[in-house]
Image 1 (cartoon, rainbow, N blue to C red):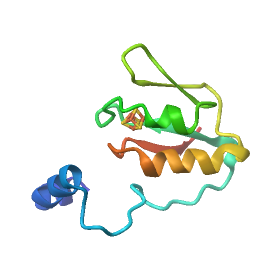
Image 2 (tube, rainbow, N blue to C red; image 1 turned 135 degrees about the vertical axis):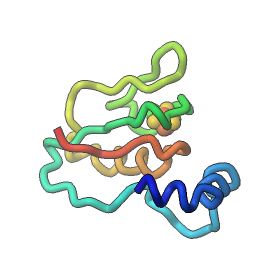
Image 3 (tube, protein in one colour; image 1 turned 60 degrees about the vertical axis):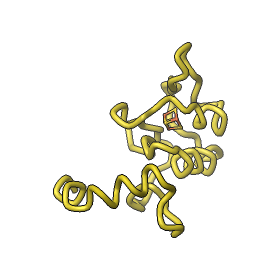
Image 4 (cartoon, rainbow, N blue to C red; image 1 turned 30 degrees about the vertical axis):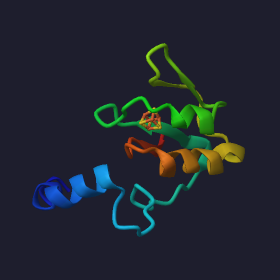
Length: 102
Ligand code: SF4
């Protein structure tokens, strides 16, 4: 992964700052979620820019601190919120969110 990011650094920057090529992306590898009870939202703090969109999309799971950065509830993602959590992952402008397992 790191060597791919190095080799395609110009393309990555173009996609990050100029909206990409127009093809749909999911922002993550499509790994199966076997047991939704163990799913939780995980942020990559090296990428998060404090846009706060995730807190608007799943306020049940994410609040914002006073600087606008997300604070995650210490609970898993209930199955009835899995769709919204996945939407937050897909819409995070910094591609900083993913659904991980406990
Ligand atoms: S939407 Fe993404 S970049 Fe914005 S606060 Fe949430 S995790 Fe961070």
